[in-house]
Amino acid sequence: MKREDLEEWLDTKWLGRNLQMMEETDSTNQRAKTAAATGEQEGLVIVAEQQTSGRGRRGRGWISPPGENIYMTMLLRPAFDPGRAPMLTLLAACAAARAAMEPGHESPRIKWPNDLVIGGKKIVGILTEMGMKKSRPDYVIIGVGINCNQTTFSGGLKQKATSLKKEYGHDVCREKVIARFLNEFEELYEGFVQYGSLAFVKQAYEKLLVNRGERVRVLEPGREWTGRALGITDTGELIVEAEDGEIREVGSGEVSVRGVYGYV
Image (cartoon, rainbow, N blue to C red; front, side):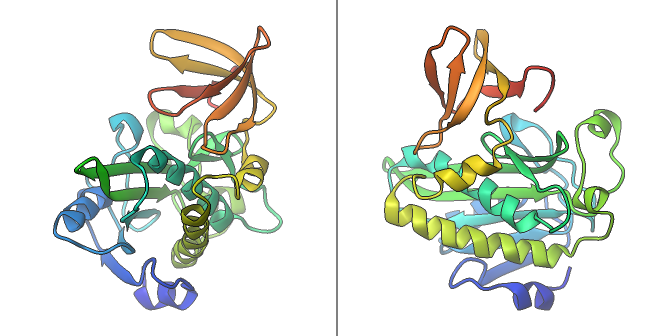
């Protein structure tokens, strides 16, 4: 991956202007946490060619073969209530979907709250973590993994994962995708800071939402129920009409949402 190519496409004011590119690291999220602890400013972006200990949500491993995909993390220093931090994950999903689109091909869709899929298979995972100081957010880091040019997946991933190359039929310029993502996310983040919710991007997010209008299974601790996903609230909860007609709002927290007959 070439820094000069990435910077050629980058059109941000502050996000990614401090760019650290690494051949290998344990985890870009872990590197960003370390940077945050030493006082690094908002806007730092860490990109690695390979992770040896990449992680997804709920502690799951994120397979990170070298030189094929995108593994990156952004460092933010938000000045808002910590309860708003989960909404940033949805912004990242929206930015990733826009960055990965290619005319003439099926567009990536968002599986609430933050996975991206094409044809029911996952291509993007996002992990948001927050550090606190005196009941206020000290930092938020957002890790983004995008399957770009990987063409083989082992084990159970064969049926669950895909890549942009497999879907589009050609190599994808990772530098361009990263730059487009950062351009999109900076604009969305500034809108979020201004409005304080997802109201300004709600309609755009729902257009990308693969669950919308579909029957879903909601897996909560100790119980499971089904309903039809309607959209999201201004604060990012999934709105689901349960089978008894009750309209419920589902927060991401410890809840998973799956399709009735599969992942999507």
